[in-house]
Image (cartoon, rainbow, N blue to C red):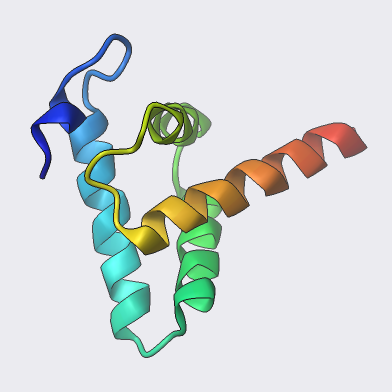
Length: 91
């Protein structure tokens, strides 16, 4: 994992979130899913099972460059953020 995943204001513990997101992405990627489908699976898992604070922290980390995030995890964050924005707009 990149050293930058351990640094930066407001990102204490981001390295652990990156590791977990990458593990989830590896699971969906290894299950024979195409990259976009793997990212959908990751985004769905994060939405269903992660605390909103964890999701926000990882999304913010992604905006800071997201060092150490796999491609599938990074794409999942984009999809998760878009879905969250849509849900908030509908309220």
